[in-house]
Figure (tube, rainbow, N blue to C red):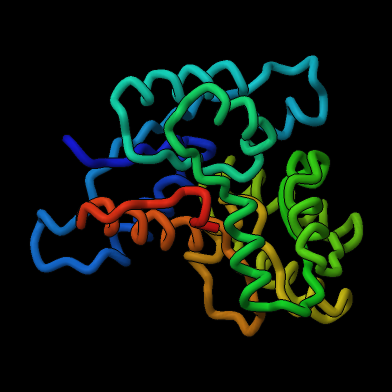
Amino acid sequence: MQKFFTVIGGMGSLATESYIHLINERTQTSKDQDYMDYILVNHATVPDRTAHIMDHSKPSFLPPLLEDIKQQSTLNPAFMVIICNTAHYYYKELQAATDIPLIHMPHLAVTTMKKKYPNAKVGLIATKGTLADHIYEKEIKDAGLEMTMGDQDIKDEVESLIYDDIKVKGKMNKEKYFHILKRMHDEFKCDVIVLGCTELSFAQEKAPDHPYAVIDAQSIIADKTIELETKMRKNEEINFDKIY
């Protein structure tokens, strides 16, 4: 392949599968050749991101991701995406390891939200690791938006949905997902809720039939992927400094 991009996923695999499904479903096609050219790295054995962020004595996910970045860079893709919000904890180190543009999923999600909901009160639901590393919190506050992460019960319920239901059982718990969104909206008065974990994006794909406004980082990066690949295929110049 001459023109393609790289997807570094497997964190977890169901979330990566959801992203691939989105880009395939949303690509306008009339034949096989209309689909996008990409390489998927489903690195499922990358150590748990939250476990390491919460306790640095636990195995780091940085070395295996650096290995992926360096391996894929030798193939010269046009750009890369990492389908895991929490993995962006080491975004600077990963981008520094390559000249290939690495799209920043949380930054893309928040800049998109700022344009769509410029005065919103924002709710953030994510893994304990993403909450602890403040990736989304900093992005949201830098955008000048008010933010809440709910209470400990919500955080525990989100963690249970992500790990107990989706990562462990491989199943979507629609009732639990809707209950989380309802509490964030009704009790914490959130105008929009950021899904700061790709497992939550998986939940949204499987159960979108609710009345709550969400910012789905995975859905947003899927659309951006299609936009960039379309420009690449048309030989249009891409200014990666202005894609957010």
